[in-house]
Image (cartoon, rainbow, N blue to C red):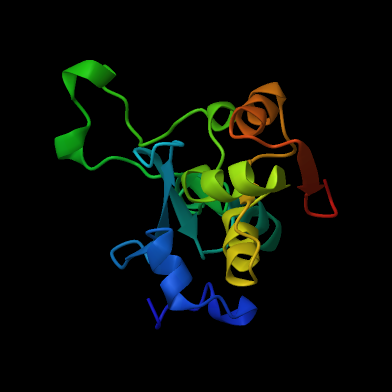
Length: 174
């Protein structure tokens, strides 16, 4: 993990990456961010790409054939696509990725729940990196929606965890 550049610009300690079980996926030149439910069970896997996004490639290379364009990721964070041997589990009806509904989960809640219960305070960010930085700086009650804003389910999860004060700390563009 120390060789991964994703966290170095923000000075996130590798011990924090280990706590959140961040993994490097060298075959794709990406990292994997597991999403856990409040009990710590993995409910989905997101892949963070460092390649140029499809929208940027389309702007830079307007004549690029579509067949080549689709090789670029559509977003920085996407559900990890399952390898062939995992695609046909009977209970998943051929689900092709390790996706999960963002509206039913808060990134890092499994690690933040005790601090939320103790303090009655929760901070909700947009992304995982902010949650990791908050924990590193002593704010163990941080979670992320991994989407644009928070919905009723997110608020209900925080209230159920014991939050009486919820601070929204979304990226400025949202």
